[in-house]
Image (cartoon, rainbow, N blue to C red; front, side, top):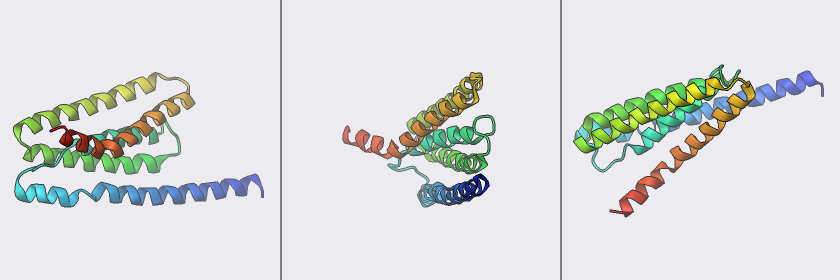
Length: 164
C-alpha cells in the first residue's frame, strides 16, 4: 500500500464518519421540537428545565470554534454542524424564555449571557496561543468538557428535583 492510497483511505473513512456524525447530531438537535411544540401550545414551560439547552449551546459554540480554520484546519464538517446546532439551541432558549415564569426567565437570561461570555473568553484566550497545535488541543479539551457537561445536564436536573 502506498502512502497516497493510505491517505485516500483515511480521507474516505474520515469523511464517512463525519457525514454519519453530522446526521446523528442533526437528529439530536431536532429531537426537542415536540417538547417546544408542547410549550408553545400550552403557553408554559411547565416543569421543563432550560438547563440542557444552555449546556448544548455552550457545547455547540465551543465545538464550532474548534472546527473553525483558526483552530482546526480542514474540519469544516465539525464547524458547520455545530453552527446549525447553536442556532437550534438558541431558538429553543428564546422560546423557553418567552414562555417561562419570571424567575425562570431571569435565570435563563443570566445563563445565556454567561454562556456567551464564556465563549468570548474561550475565543479570546485561544487566539492568544501562538502555537497552532497547542491552541487546537486547548480548544479540543474545552470542547470535550462541554460535550460531557451537555450529556450530563439531565443528571443535574434529576439531582435538583431530588433536593426539593
